[in-house]
Length: 157
Image 1 (cartoon, helix red, strand yellow):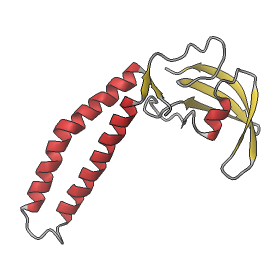
Image 2 (image 1 turned 180 degrees about the vertical axis):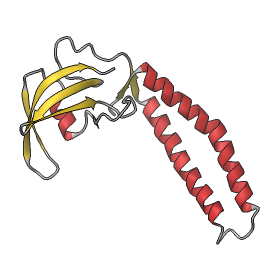
Image 3 (image 1 turned 90 degrees about the horizontal axis):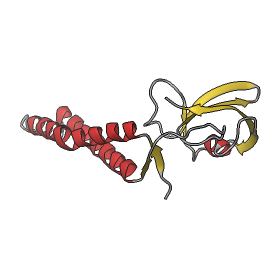
């Protein structure tokens, strides 16, 4: 199983979210369910069904966070000094004449509106390990071969 790279800051933020959901979040949803249940007939009780759906989403997020933290590689961003693309870097590429900038890694480490591509995605795996100036190709989901040139690779901050 491959690891997901996270900064210590992102790992701490996710651990805090997990702790909140497992404690306060669960107790709040239980209160909502109990309150809705007290209203009577559960078959036509919209509040009850909404609370149960919210509980399901919260439990799914708890499982996702646990899995992510258990399988995370936590560390500092790569230096980028040698111009090699690695997870945790802001990468600028040229694709079919257009320039594009994105974060290579997990959206959990991103802040703001920057596009994020996993190193497991077709684009991410194509540029992974590439040096600035290098061209690589990947196959798009529609089967078309796309050439990408790495213009810049720098530390994401």
